[in-house]
Image (cartoon, one colour):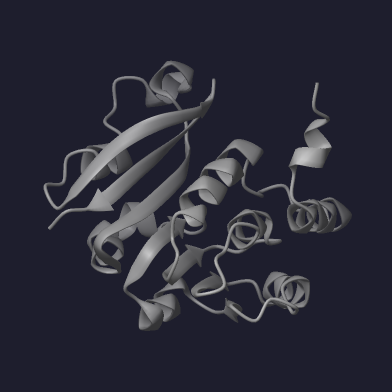
Length: 191
């Protein structure tokens, strides 16, 4: 039997510790992190973007699988969090932590992989996110609740995120459960 903490990369453990230390509760789930780790490991030469660095937990999962010829650029709107993340990744020359609005990340597009974590970009500007991908590039959208776990006030409504991302003809997408009560949409640009 494997101790779960030994299968978590050291950099991820450091980011998790930082989040605990400053009581930041919005870090990526470990299951989302493992998915990012797997997807990142297949990019041998390219560019990965992340919207919403937070304390760098999701970023650390990405960086732990990052090929030396691949760059990771992550952006955080909160200046204190951005500074902490810059310190966390200071020894990683192919990682840049930016402070600012997520639109500032677009100057580094197109991306082979884009993790749209923080903010409301996946809801308010999905076309912009698709345009930020290379053809064949992947996007990960997390923090989705499966319909059977929706609160009563959501019942009978259409989820605009799923409505767009699972039906837009420019992408091929699938919803994947990462835990019983958490899902992600994984999509690739086909047009």
